[in-house]
Image (cartoon, rainbow, N blue to C red; front, side, top):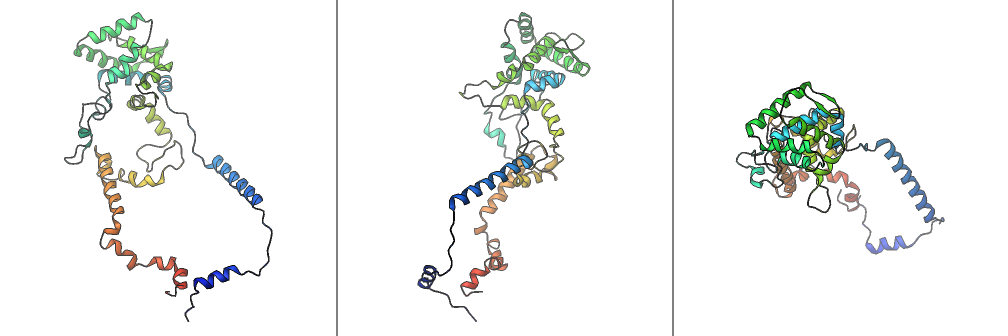
Length: 319
Protein backbone atom coordinates (compact mmCIF):
# COMPACT_ATOMS: atom_id res chain seq x y z
CA UNK A 1 0.00 0.00 0.00
CA UNK A 2 1.42 3.31 -1.08
CA UNK A 3 1.55 6.22 1.33
CA UNK A 4 -0.21 9.41 0.27
CA UNK A 5 2.18 12.30 -0.16
CA UNK A 6 1.18 15.35 1.90
CA UNK A 7 0.79 18.65 0.12
CA UNK A 8 2.83 21.68 1.07
CA UNK A 9 -0.21 23.32 2.64
CA UNK A 10 -0.83 20.25 4.83
CA UNK A 11 2.82 20.13 5.90
CA UNK A 12 2.76 23.82 6.80
CA UNK A 13 -0.41 23.44 8.83
CA UNK A 14 0.96 20.40 10.70
CA UNK A 15 4.13 22.28 11.55
CA UNK A 16 2.18 25.35 12.75
CA UNK A 17 0.03 23.47 15.29
CA UNK A 18 1.74 22.01 18.42
CA UNK A 19 0.05 20.74 21.59
CA UNK A 20 3.12 19.19 23.28
CA UNK A 21 4.93 20.37 26.41
CA UNK A 22 7.45 23.19 26.49
CA UNK A 23 10.74 23.36 28.42
CA UNK A 24 13.00 26.35 29.06
CA UNK A 25 16.22 26.39 27.02
CA UNK A 26 19.30 28.41 28.01
CA UNK A 27 21.12 29.19 24.76
CA UNK A 28 23.99 31.01 26.52
CA UNK A 29 24.59 28.05 28.83
CA UNK A 30 24.54 25.66 25.86
CA UNK A 31 27.06 27.83 24.00
CA UNK A 32 29.43 27.98 26.99
CA UNK A 33 29.26 24.22 27.58
CA UNK A 34 29.85 23.44 23.90
CA UNK A 35 32.80 25.85 23.76
CA UNK A 36 34.36 24.32 26.89
CA UNK A 37 33.94 20.76 25.59
CA UNK A 38 35.40 21.55 22.17
CA UNK A 39 38.31 23.52 23.68
CA UNK A 40 39.13 20.65 26.06
CA UNK A 41 38.99 18.14 23.23
CA UNK A 42 41.27 20.26 21.03
CA UNK A 43 43.73 20.70 23.90
CA UNK A 44 43.88 16.97 24.63
CA UNK A 45 44.30 16.04 20.97
CA UNK A 46 47.02 18.67 20.62
CA UNK A 47 48.93 17.23 23.57
CA UNK A 48 48.74 13.59 22.50
CA UNK A 49 48.45 13.65 18.68
CA UNK A 50 50.05 16.86 17.41
CA UNK A 51 53.08 16.88 15.13
CA UNK A 52 56.45 17.62 16.74
CA UNK A 53 57.83 21.12 16.52
CA UNK A 54 61.45 20.26 15.71
CA UNK A 55 63.97 23.01 15.28
CA UNK A 56 64.91 23.69 11.63
CA UNK A 57 68.29 22.62 10.30
CA UNK A 58 70.75 25.44 9.67
CA UNK A 59 74.20 25.72 8.19
CA UNK A 60 75.48 26.83 11.60
CA UNK A 61 74.14 23.62 13.15
CA UNK A 62 75.60 21.54 10.32
CA UNK A 63 79.07 23.10 10.54
CA UNK A 64 79.19 22.58 14.30
CA UNK A 65 77.95 19.00 14.34
CA UNK A 66 79.67 17.75 11.16
CA UNK A 67 82.58 20.13 10.44
CA UNK A 68 84.47 17.71 8.18
CA UNK A 69 81.34 16.99 6.14
CA UNK A 70 80.69 20.72 5.86
CA UNK A 71 84.22 21.43 4.60
CA UNK A 72 84.08 18.47 2.18
CA UNK A 73 80.82 19.82 0.74
CA UNK A 74 82.22 23.36 0.53
CA UNK A 75 85.20 22.10 -1.50
CA UNK A 76 82.83 20.32 -3.91
CA UNK A 77 80.94 23.61 -4.34
CA UNK A 78 84.23 25.40 -4.96
CA UNK A 79 85.44 23.03 -7.71
CA UNK A 80 81.98 22.51 -9.25
CA UNK A 81 81.68 18.78 -8.48
CA UNK A 82 78.64 19.01 -6.17
CA UNK A 83 75.14 17.86 -7.00
CA UNK A 84 73.86 21.43 -7.27
CA UNK A 85 76.68 22.44 -9.61
CA UNK A 86 75.74 19.71 -12.09
CA UNK A 87 71.98 19.71 -11.57
CA UNK A 88 70.95 21.82 -14.55
CA UNK A 89 67.88 24.06 -14.85
CA UNK A 90 66.52 25.98 -13.02
CA UNK A 91 69.85 26.54 -11.25
CA UNK A 92 72.68 25.90 -13.74
CA UNK A 93 73.34 25.22 -17.41
CA UNK A 94 75.33 22.05 -16.66
CA UNK A 95 72.56 19.57 -17.42
CA UNK A 96 69.30 19.03 -19.30
CA UNK A 97 67.20 18.06 -16.29
CA UNK A 98 64.39 15.53 -16.34
CA UNK A 99 62.44 14.72 -19.47
CA UNK A 100 59.56 12.67 -20.83
CA UNK A 101 60.49 11.32 -24.28
CA UNK A 102 61.06 14.47 -26.35
CA UNK A 103 59.60 16.78 -23.69
CA UNK A 104 62.46 18.49 -21.83
CA UNK A 105 60.51 20.38 -19.21
CA UNK A 106 63.40 21.84 -17.21
CA UNK A 107 65.50 22.66 -20.27
CA UNK A 108 62.63 24.49 -21.99
CA UNK A 109 61.83 26.55 -18.89
CA UNK A 110 65.49 27.52 -18.58
CA UNK A 111 67.58 28.78 -15.69
CA UNK A 112 65.25 30.95 -13.61
CA UNK A 113 67.27 30.85 -10.38
CA UNK A 114 70.94 30.98 -11.46
CA UNK A 115 73.47 29.69 -8.96
CA UNK A 116 77.25 29.69 -9.27
CA UNK A 117 78.25 27.35 -6.46
CA UNK A 118 81.85 28.57 -6.21
CA UNK A 119 80.87 32.22 -6.06
CA UNK A 120 77.61 31.98 -4.13
CA UNK A 121 78.60 29.37 -1.54
CA UNK A 122 82.31 30.05 -1.03
CA UNK A 123 84.02 33.07 -2.60
CA UNK A 124 81.36 35.73 -2.04
CA UNK A 125 80.78 34.78 1.63
CA UNK A 126 84.57 34.76 2.22
CA UNK A 127 84.74 38.31 0.86
CA UNK A 128 82.44 39.46 3.67
CA UNK A 129 84.93 38.46 6.40
CA UNK A 130 86.73 41.66 7.49
CA UNK A 131 90.27 42.24 8.82
CA UNK A 132 91.85 38.99 7.61
CA UNK A 133 94.86 39.68 5.36
CA UNK A 134 95.83 35.99 5.21
CA UNK A 135 92.39 35.09 3.87
CA UNK A 136 92.54 37.90 1.28
CA UNK A 137 95.90 36.61 0.09
CA UNK A 138 94.66 33.00 -0.07
CA UNK A 139 91.50 33.91 -1.99
CA UNK A 140 93.45 36.04 -4.47
CA UNK A 141 95.98 33.22 -5.00
CA UNK A 142 93.20 30.71 -5.67
CA UNK A 143 91.37 32.93 -8.16
CA UNK A 144 94.64 33.76 -9.97
CA UNK A 145 95.63 30.09 -10.38
CA UNK A 146 94.87 28.11 -13.52
CA UNK A 147 91.92 25.72 -13.63
CA UNK A 148 94.32 22.77 -13.63
CA UNK A 149 96.11 24.02 -10.50
CA UNK A 150 92.81 24.74 -8.75
CA UNK A 151 91.60 21.22 -9.54
CA UNK A 152 94.83 19.71 -8.20
CA UNK A 153 94.47 21.64 -4.93
CA UNK A 154 90.80 20.79 -4.36
CA UNK A 155 91.14 17.14 -5.41
CA UNK A 156 94.10 16.55 -3.12
CA UNK A 157 92.43 18.38 -0.25
CA UNK A 158 89.19 16.43 -0.69
CA UNK A 159 91.06 13.11 -0.62
CA UNK A 160 92.93 14.16 2.51
CA UNK A 161 89.71 15.15 4.31
CA UNK A 162 88.98 11.45 4.85
CA UNK A 163 91.72 11.50 7.52
CA UNK A 164 91.13 15.04 8.77
CA UNK A 165 90.83 15.99 12.43
CA UNK A 166 89.10 18.93 14.06
CA UNK A 167 90.98 21.30 16.32
CA UNK A 168 92.07 24.87 16.80
CA UNK A 169 88.81 26.20 15.41
CA UNK A 170 89.25 24.50 12.03
CA UNK A 171 89.77 21.26 10.13
CA UNK A 172 93.34 20.00 10.26
CA UNK A 173 94.62 18.30 7.11
CA UNK A 174 98.18 17.16 6.52
CA UNK A 175 99.73 18.20 3.24
CA UNK A 176 100.17 21.24 1.05
CA UNK A 177 97.10 22.20 -0.93
CA UNK A 178 97.78 25.81 -1.71
CA UNK A 179 95.33 28.37 -0.29
CA UNK A 180 92.43 25.91 -0.01
CA UNK A 181 92.91 25.01 3.72
CA UNK A 182 93.02 28.70 4.70
CA UNK A 183 89.85 29.40 2.72
CA UNK A 184 87.95 26.39 4.07
CA UNK A 185 88.82 27.06 7.71
CA UNK A 186 87.71 30.66 7.31
CA UNK A 187 84.44 29.53 5.74
CA UNK A 188 83.96 26.99 8.55
CA UNK A 189 84.41 29.73 11.14
CA UNK A 190 81.92 31.95 9.32
CA UNK A 191 79.40 29.12 9.16
CA UNK A 192 79.76 28.19 12.84
CA UNK A 193 79.15 31.80 13.83
CA UNK A 194 75.88 31.82 11.88
CA UNK A 195 77.14 34.37 9.38
CA UNK A 196 76.94 32.05 6.38
CA UNK A 197 73.22 31.47 6.95
CA UNK A 198 72.69 35.22 6.72
CA UNK A 199 74.92 35.60 3.65
CA UNK A 200 73.01 32.94 1.69
CA UNK A 201 69.63 34.44 2.63
CA UNK A 202 70.54 37.94 1.51
CA UNK A 203 68.73 39.01 -1.67
CA UNK A 204 67.34 42.11 -3.36
CA UNK A 205 63.87 41.40 -1.97
CA UNK A 206 62.50 43.35 0.97
CA UNK A 207 61.65 40.18 2.87
CA UNK A 208 64.56 37.72 3.08
CA UNK A 209 62.53 34.53 2.75
CA UNK A 210 64.28 32.75 -0.13
CA UNK A 211 65.87 29.65 1.42
CA UNK A 212 66.92 28.10 -1.90
CA UNK A 213 70.67 28.61 -1.52
CA UNK A 214 71.08 27.36 2.06
CA UNK A 215 68.85 24.37 1.34
CA UNK A 216 70.79 23.42 -1.78
CA UNK A 217 74.08 23.81 0.07
CA UNK A 218 72.90 21.57 2.92
CA UNK A 219 71.38 19.05 0.50
CA UNK A 220 74.81 18.53 -1.09
CA UNK A 221 76.16 17.51 2.34
CA UNK A 222 75.20 14.81 4.81
CA UNK A 223 73.15 16.74 7.39
CA UNK A 224 69.72 16.43 5.80
CA UNK A 225 70.28 12.79 4.87
CA UNK A 226 71.34 11.98 8.43
CA UNK A 227 68.29 13.75 9.82
CA UNK A 228 65.97 11.96 7.39
CA UNK A 229 67.47 8.61 8.40
CA UNK A 230 67.03 9.32 12.10
CA UNK A 231 63.36 10.19 11.47
CA UNK A 232 62.74 7.17 9.20
CA UNK A 233 62.04 9.34 6.17
CA UNK A 234 64.28 7.67 3.60
CA UNK A 235 63.08 6.47 0.22
CA UNK A 236 62.61 2.85 1.29
CA UNK A 237 59.46 3.80 3.20
CA UNK A 238 56.14 4.80 1.71
CA UNK A 239 54.33 7.99 2.43
CA UNK A 240 55.14 11.66 2.72
CA UNK A 241 55.25 13.95 5.72
CA UNK A 242 55.14 17.69 6.20
CA UNK A 243 56.58 17.27 9.70
CA UNK A 244 59.46 15.12 10.90
CA UNK A 245 58.81 12.24 13.26
CA UNK A 246 56.53 9.21 13.23
CA UNK A 247 53.33 11.18 12.68
CA UNK A 248 50.98 11.10 9.68
CA UNK A 249 51.39 13.82 7.11
CA UNK A 250 49.32 14.51 4.02
CA UNK A 251 47.67 11.09 3.56
CA UNK A 252 46.31 12.01 0.15
CA UNK A 253 49.88 12.16 -1.21
CA UNK A 254 50.24 8.38 -0.96
CA UNK A 255 49.06 8.11 -4.56
CA UNK A 256 52.09 10.15 -5.67
CA UNK A 257 54.62 8.34 -3.51
CA UNK A 258 53.24 4.93 -4.50
CA UNK A 259 54.70 5.20 -8.00
CA UNK A 260 58.23 5.76 -6.67
CA UNK A 261 58.19 2.26 -5.14
CA UNK A 262 57.65 0.31 -8.36
CA UNK A 263 59.52 -0.16 -11.63
CA UNK A 264 60.45 1.64 -13.77
CA UNK A 265 60.04 4.75 -11.60
CA UNK A 266 62.12 3.52 -8.66
CA UNK A 267 65.24 3.37 -10.85
CA UNK A 268 64.57 6.16 -13.36
CA UNK A 269 66.44 9.47 -13.36
CA UNK A 270 63.24 11.05 -14.71
CA UNK A 271 60.97 9.66 -11.98
CA UNK A 272 59.65 13.04 -10.88
CA UNK A 273 58.57 14.05 -14.38
CA UNK A 274 57.05 10.63 -15.13
CA UNK A 275 55.08 10.49 -11.88
CA UNK A 276 53.73 14.01 -12.36
CA UNK A 277 52.67 13.12 -15.91
CA UNK A 278 50.82 10.00 -14.71
CA UNK A 279 49.09 11.93 -11.94
CA UNK A 280 48.16 14.63 -14.43
CA UNK A 281 46.48 12.06 -16.70
CA UNK A 282 44.66 10.43 -13.77
CA UNK A 283 43.49 13.80 -12.47
CA UNK A 284 42.24 14.78 -15.90
CA UNK A 285 40.37 11.49 -16.13
CA UNK A 286 38.71 12.17 -12.77
CA UNK A 287 37.58 15.61 -13.96
CA UNK A 288 36.18 14.18 -17.21
CA UNK A 289 34.24 11.27 -15.65
CA UNK A 290 30.85 12.87 -16.50
CA UNK A 291 31.87 12.89 -20.17
CA UNK A 292 33.44 9.41 -20.51
CA UNK A 293 30.97 6.89 -22.01
CA UNK A 294 30.67 3.75 -19.90
CA UNK A 295 32.29 5.21 -16.82
CA UNK A 296 29.57 7.83 -16.40
CA UNK A 297 26.92 5.06 -16.61
CA UNK A 298 28.26 3.02 -13.68
CA UNK A 299 25.78 4.57 -11.18
CA UNK A 300 22.92 3.32 -13.37
CA UNK A 301 24.31 -0.23 -13.38
CA UNK A 302 25.04 -0.28 -9.66
CA UNK A 303 22.32 1.91 -8.06
CA UNK A 304 23.98 2.26 -4.66
CA UNK A 305 22.54 5.74 -4.40
CA UNK A 306 19.05 4.24 -4.12
CA UNK A 307 20.13 2.35 -1.00
CA UNK A 308 21.70 5.46 0.53
CA UNK A 309 18.66 7.62 -0.22
CA UNK A 310 16.03 4.92 0.36
CA UNK A 311 13.99 7.01 2.81
CA UNK A 312 13.77 9.80 0.25
CA UNK A 313 12.56 7.47 -2.49
CA UNK A 314 10.04 5.84 -0.17
CA UNK A 315 8.63 9.24 0.75
CA UNK A 316 8.34 10.01 -2.95
CA UNK A 317 6.49 6.75 -3.50
CA UNK A 318 9.22 5.50 -5.84
CA UNK A 319 10.84 2.79 -3.74
